[in-house]
Picture 1: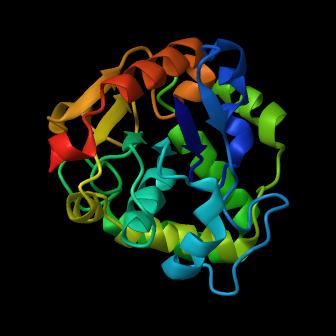
Picture 2 (picture 1 turned 30 degrees about the horizontal axis):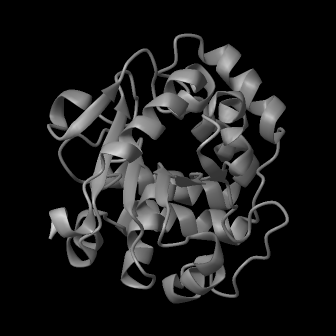
Length: 240
């Protein structure tokens, strides 16, 4: 089994490192960075999904299960319109949309204000976003310190990529591309996720004891859950 793990807004692929000791031997895991993150070259137009698909084509094989976390799930779904669909997509910490739909706790107006503030002071607003998404963990301060040890204390992406990501959080949706591609999908949401109301998401599976960042809070459980979930995803033929 192959898993491709895709990170979310403002956080690079190092977020998956806590899961490393917990993967079964038979599972092949890759953790590519999005363009503009760390050493990955940025796109000339960071909001160009066709260019993003070309940049990520080799990292997103069709014989794998893609695991998109947060914005990573929105981008992975959007790329289904441009790349051969994978065996399945696991939406981790993401529903059909990030905002403007049942279960979404971030309003469109709040996200617009956040983006305006980000353009004025990217570093401060990035830290504010990290604190918001870690607020659902049992020990948010410890989780924040653990995240800082993984990715540092400055944004690990260029400002253009981060700004494009905020626009994509506001506009992208997963359900349309999933339906068009026939790609099987399962949604996993932490029971204390501060960005989503799990009670309003009837089709989501609950991750107990965590919020938006199970990679930090419950890495062993998350690794086992991702493997188990990937194994029970229906085939493309079953989903048709």
